[in-house]
Amino acid sequence: MNRALVAALLSAFVFPGAGHLYLRRPRRAGLFVVPALLAAAVYVGDITTQASRMVDQILAGTLAPDPAAIAARLHAQDGGSPLLTVAGVVLVACWIGSIVDAFVVARQGAPRKEQDNRAPRRD
Image (cartoon, rainbow, N blue to C red):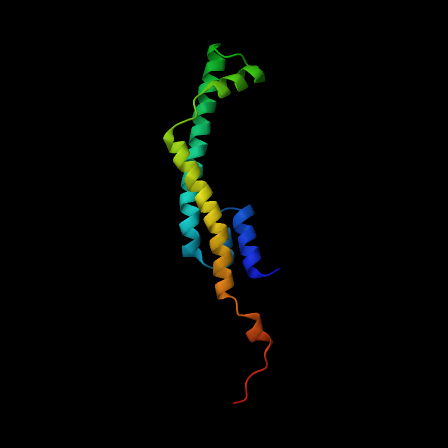
């Protein structure tokens, strides 16, 4: 498998920037890893807050410890804060951008096949 494809697949299936680390481009990887980690932290923080509220409601007796009741409460909540929307956009942009950029960077750094297969010139 060529390096460009491996780098793109690492960025696609592991985490944004993983392909750049494979290509030994840590600074460029940081451009994708840092914002993606921050966006993921926003999501984890929101999930933790929601879970904590629901546990408090269950312990207080205002929410039945029934999976259907919990699911109904989750669906009844609003779409979340605008920060979650921004975090989602940042995460998707980092992920897609990382895949494309890793592929392009690897292709630019790879020698051309035509040049590799030619015999050296004797001029």
